[in-house]
Image (cartoon, rainbow, N blue to C red; front, side, top):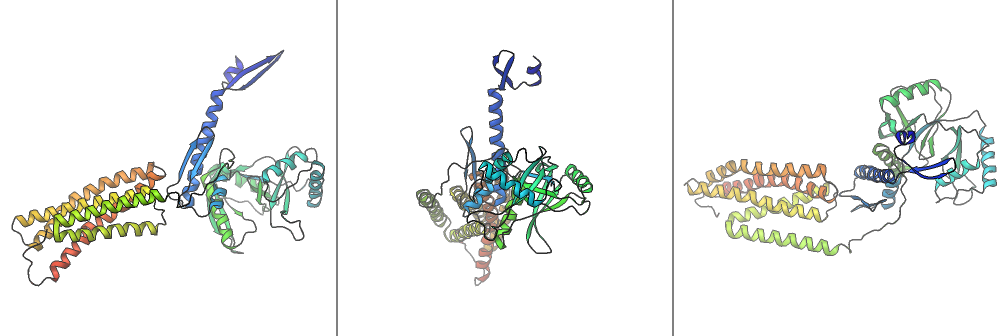
Length: 458
């Protein structure tokens, strides 16, 4: 009864003599699995959003799988590395007093020889790290562990091997990624190399301040996913909760991308479990050609019918509407290109809907002009009054559409968000083209005419 009260998630699975066997209940295991999958999806989504992929689709598949669709992505390997990092950040003190670097390297060489644990380029570094720590058990203190800083291959090293700088660290984690508030990319003023500058939360800043004050002259290792990124000597007390993470041997653009990716995964948070890539597919444009062609054909047919209707029903003024609608579509596409957006089927649907909304605006304006002309006003006065009196109705209608688009963009994901973005851009271009472009064309026509225009083709 005491165990049930203190550990409600445990269930007794067997009894042997005086020994009771307990295990986690099925419901608790299912809850942990579901929570892990959901949390992983949110972390992946945050990373992808900061990576800049438009309309990503991230969803669970079955009980323990996640599918990630990234339309328009070109750097596939970089995206995979960004998604799969666990981003477990830890700050640990280096135990330099236990043994000097040469003795530490000799101990590691002996442990590798005795256990057969070897690291080859391309294999999982985490597997090697676990194996070498198990092999070093008894040779180092129980409160210590081995870690490595990966660097460029040393001159004369065996091909496909990576030189590793060993560290003997205290197991105690002084600070972790949970204490991190923000991470940004900066440049070292001394060598102009990119680095990741981080800021700690108030609790972490207090611990960091006290930790550096008590360990002046000692080294503190910054460990990410079991790999030491830097181990600077603490020269003085560091207040304010700010620090930097230096990078490896990458140069130029590669170093900047490495710093950007590291900052992204630190800001987005750590994955609750390590991901294993099971399958990767690159879907070329030929597989989606039918859908793209069908969507484009539907859009073209719809626009053509709208243009024909406007020309037939509004005559000369219909030409003005067609010009305005064409400019509306061009402005929308230009903004999408400027945002480096990938035009998908929901985006095409958003553009088609934009054209339909723009026609509504033209119809309202033209009908107001016709009402003014029927009251006996001049063409110039009718056009001016038509635009002025139609403004409120057009503005109100587009504002309500804009509210819906903002809600879809805020709470939707993937294709829904892509549709909302295209729709929101279309609303802005519709207001501009209907109220400004059309008015300029009418004013230009009236202003360049010889004498006062007696009749307007509308």
